[in-house]
Length: 137
Image (cartoon, rainbow, N blue to C red; front, side):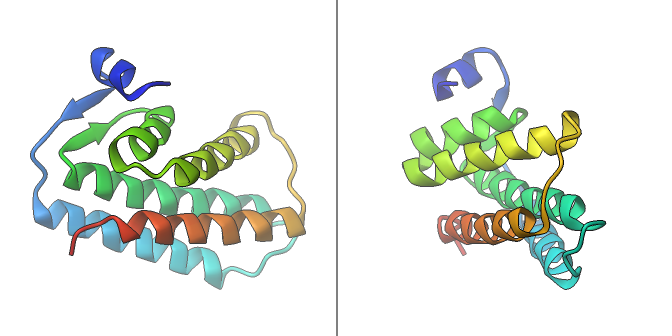
């Protein structure tokens, strides 16, 4: 999806973000990733860990987009935001890959192996750090 489409279809709204709200989102992202890392990866936790890791990335993206003056209501638009607003095409591609895999886990009852979950979490953690690089202190 193109960023312009996200705006035209009112999937993204312009907003003036409160610094305290952004700080809360960043703390939530930190806490979510912290929780993800504390959970041992096994057959019972693999899916949950991957979903939590994705949420940590999304929370960081929500903070960054708010800081840039946007309220994004669609995960595909986060890809466009990263690519077209932030100028981070590689991060956008990585996010899109994680988004697709997350959707399989969430909506298609797709299984995930322990090793795949560990790779997913590692990728999400790196992507989250990449997103946080763009957040103004």
